[in-house]
Amino acid sequence: MTETVKAYAAQSATSPLTPFSFEYRTPRADDVVIDILYTGVCHSDLHTARNDWGGTIYPVVPGHEIVGRVRSVGAKVSKFKAGDLVGVGCLVDSCRHCEPCKHDLEQYCENGFVATYSSIDKHDGQPTYGGYAKTITVSDAFVLKVPENLDTKAVPPILCAGITTWSPLRHWNIGKGSKVAVIGLGGLGHMAIKLAHALGAEVTLFSRSPGKTADAKRLGAHNVVISTDAAQMQSVANQFELIIDTVPYAHDVNPYIPTLKLDGTLVYVGLLGEVTPSLNTVPMILGRRTVAGSLIGGIKETQELLDFCGEHNITADVEMINMADINTAYERMLKSDVKYRFVIDIATL
Image 1 (cartoon, rainbow, N blue to C red):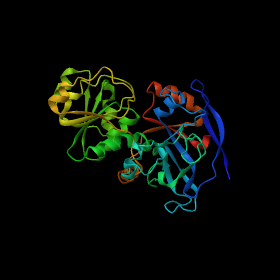
Image 2: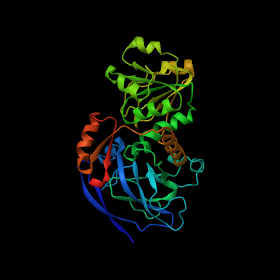
Image 3: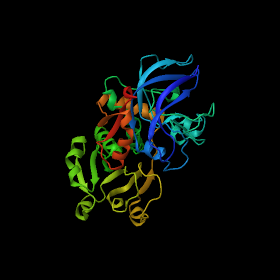
Image 4: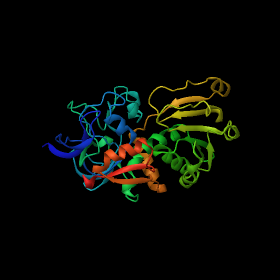
């Protein structure tokens, strides 16, 4: 049977999020039905609700940082049972047979992954709805086990902000003795610092604001370099194996490239769009340096991250909000007025 689900949705690019209800599909044999406890608020939620990237399917129920308890499972599900603490991140399906999918890189599915919201279900052609809702139904292949020892309300951002920074740390083999820098101290940046520190790296925050120094060091940064200070930037030339750029808008990355060591990489994880001003290739060529991009992470890698966070007691720094406060939270998020991620208590829906 279908189920009527309470949620919050945007009806258009210019409308606020308001109460909404929708009919959820009859659960399939491989489905897990989850009663949602907490949902993180991501910049992507706002961009999608306002159609900043185009292609939003309205009405849209955002939310892809979801933690809840399993209510029921389909006949073919053996990995989960009622009562389990679980998570759902940015993906709820993929083709499962292309080369990236076969290598646990569903986020790069060559036939297009199915996003948790504002996407089309491959089986029934219906739109997907996210975590600003009481429940979500997802194939067991895209459900994650959440460690019970963690502060549950601070877990949701791990499923997007966390995995978005963890994936490049793992891909570029960051560990003990590595030198890593992070550009930007927000939802992604604060997770990047925590995770790189826990992996044993020496972590530097690049910031335009000296006022962020104390908080960066509390999170695990060893050093803070003021990026507008030429002398400070020169002092870290040829230092870093990896720079994770978490800034969600276009900015000049040319001053950062010379701080990479030989064969170092600057990876974009926050910006979707054109790089302006354009890149100067001279320091790239002279140091065989690379500028790359990285998109969230696959399911196996996200489970690895959750397990790592459980072992090291890592969660996000969050501010709890009620569902009715989501539009105010969006406005505050645009002003970077949150440390460092909003999380919705779905009990208030």
